[in-house]
Length: 602
Image 1 (cartoon, helix red, strand yellow):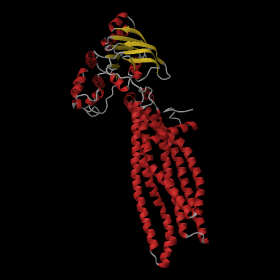
Image 2 (spheres, helix red, strand yellow):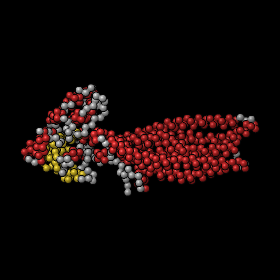
Image 3 (cartoon, one colour):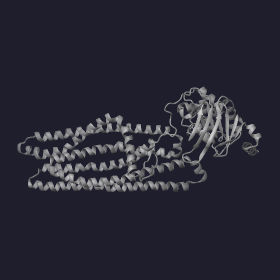
Image 4 (cartoon, one colour):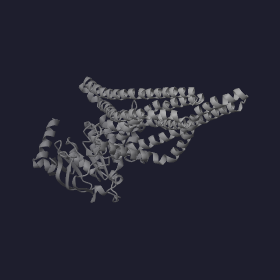
């Protein structure tokens, strides 16, 4: 069994094979992040090795001072050994401090470079992923990947990695120095590695599962918070605060419980390290004391051995902290690597066909479509739309109208068959060409941070102010824009710059018209407009849609009146096709819908 992408990311019971696969995926991502930084990492390694070696030399100098330099001073009044030992200690301390500073700076730059690259990759990749991914993977989870998960990795790189590298080097050099100085004390230290390994291995196996759980529960907290705040209007309207608080309290409790279990095992691991270290120091002192009494060991060597034994375990707590950060960051990297492993369900063509001047003719040829493994929406669909024709799609909810719009925009690809623009399969057109040729305006208009002019210019970033103003006038937005505090320069997210739902929709129309696409899709785009605004838009549509293909999806049949052709859909099939007048006279489904709409106006 294998896992791919974000599949099963909430699970904590991965099999051994699955865990191996996920670790390999994370390892590949990590290597790709650090590979460009190898020269800096090698320089950093050299610096920290010299720094650690300089720091470890101290106890050996102490042993020399006690056993050799002090007797020379006492017996022969020879100051040279003691001054040499003291001077060497000072020089090594300065070298160690300077190199530690250099290593800290180098490590910080490396970690920030890694984070910058990873953050940019994640942002760019989530943008490239198809709409299908974003409709199933909530925005709260994406936010968790960009915030809490990257923060866990930052903590590891900024402090944990420093603790690891220095800790391992100090322990290695210290153990080697102790064995060189006194092999017997070295054997005592080596014997302690057995319980040290057992304790560390237990912590590793237990914490891996728990840290995966903390990343999952942390994401759940963010998801619940984002969902609640995004739907705050519904929360206020239906007074669901208590219910939401209870639900949020449950996910927070799950997160607290997972964190508590993680802290508990860390509370066993850290004191266990300290206990082993204290026992080793005591054993070195006891064994060494008897050897000093018997004359087999000098007192300076005993002192240095005790210091080395203590120094060997001093980084252990730091390593425990590192392992804490490492497990958290490792679980976070697993989640991020899963997102990065996802591939767009609507891929960019490898050898796209050029679409220089699209006319806007559309063709559905034996199209079969279903969302994933769900219900079939279009069983066998055929349709030909000539260029510059305005089509209105009407029908009951779930008939397949919005699905057609998504297929034309290539948010999805057909399960079978093809959708073509000017005779070219959409799957063979580059995304850039397709986005210039086809623009969709939905009911949920969205304004980005910035001015009104900036938001309209999204449709054409290099547009002049005159072009922006002309587009706004064409859809009837100019009047309300000039009434804003700063007109077209009004910031839509600041006081005085707020606009109504209908006004936001008018700005979306202006944005789309400025883009000047060959095909314009209006998916319930007039649903948020009041009657006067809708009439203004219809007036603009009559002029601006004259030379382009337009697909209008609307329940409000007032918008349908400007269409050249009306398609009535039912269960993914076209049951009526003709002009509005023809279908009204036909007395079928559209005629009934039209009559019901006229009656609703009385």
